[in-house]
Amino acid sequence: MDSKMLVRLGAVIFVAIAITATVIEMTRQEDAPRVRTAPQLQPSADPLRATLRRCQGLGEAATRDAECLSAWAESRDRFLGNTPAPAAPLADER
Image (cartoon, rainbow, N blue to C red; front, side, top):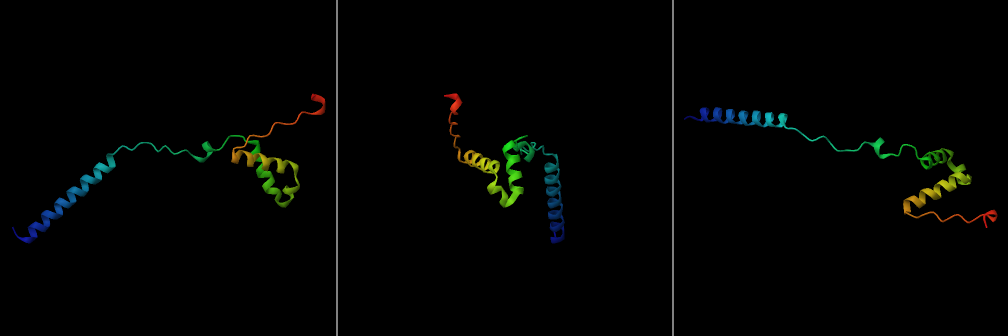
């Protein structure tokens, strides 16, 4: 066999392997991705989140807003895993 014949045979074998690999890859069944999308991760209606967004829009004025201060405290407690302290009984409840 001369060298031209070996080169052609090598090229044919290479093309056959490439075609086989392509067919195998195209016919492979892949599992559906199990990625949760962002809307599924967010709660549907969280009043604390809405309040925090409103406070964010207030800017510096939010530091003087009682509702914002309360929302920030609740958010901090959630983050740190603290349970809120029980409310003190009112004078009428004693």
